[in-house]
Length: 184
Image (cartoon, helix red, strand yellow):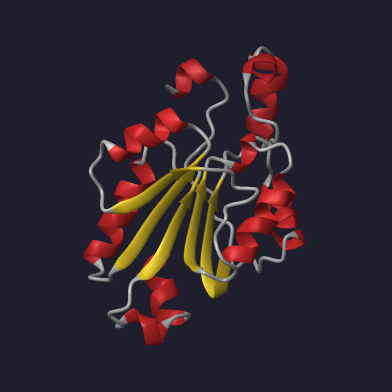
């Protein structure tokens, strides 16, 4: 997806030596930061990588990876970043945890440059098999999960469009196994 975005939507910058500003919103332990640094290195594209997470322990773990990036504890509802200052944002397995998702999506839309790439990953917990798991097979999940949203692709699209994002595509990854022990 990144390569397609660079070639299709940002052709003038695809070969530019100016670094792209990339934000991992809710970066956790930095696993996605590591992947992003490798993706752009393979594309031979300079980047300025940044990660924000609310949990200082997770930021410390991300720092231990030794990546060349800016890391900080902060809120995705108020990042402190300038408007239209980020070329690409990754929000992976974060949105389902945020009570007021529209505030966060609005803030991320505000800081994303026109023509920027916003990649969102959420579990497909609104699908039929997930509802079977949550309501029949493992009802305890609803009492123990920290997820506050159980997205379907339709609900995700509505939330993104309400925040002003243009949704190019929604892709389903993998197969949902309706029991955590079996999935593990």
